[in-house]
Image (cartoon, rainbow, N blue to C red; front, side):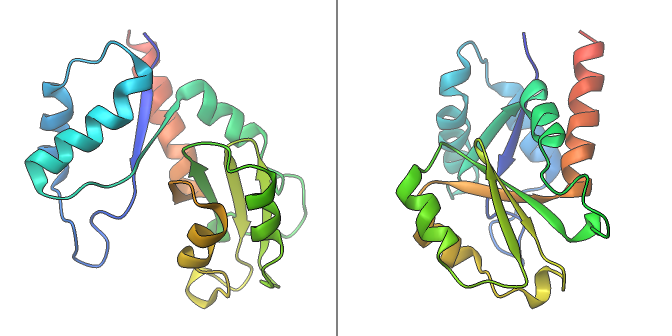
Length: 167
């Protein structure tokens, strides 16, 4: 069975929607997964019952994470600070019009590049000083997504590969 990595949006942020990691791990262990298409909905529903809120849940296999890392459009560009690179994982392809809507937003010096179900965003001045906001991304794309910095993305793959090796 492939290893699935789940990324929840909007929890443990700014003191809101808090879940302790051991409680979340315990909840995950209590679920019996058989069909990967239902994982996100089952996780979202179980979190809502147990913790009282329903975050978007985005899933990727280790292979999909590996592909997202390999596809990084900023990887070969000189002068890129990986600590200022974020990957937004989308629940589904938002479609051509949504991509055009996001591309039309004036965000310089930030850069946004789509690749499959991932959106790579480079914040040369840091995310804290960004012109591009999450609400603007949400309005443009209209699909659930969650972002992770580059270091977290590579760490998630490392964890997934260790789990795969132990099976």
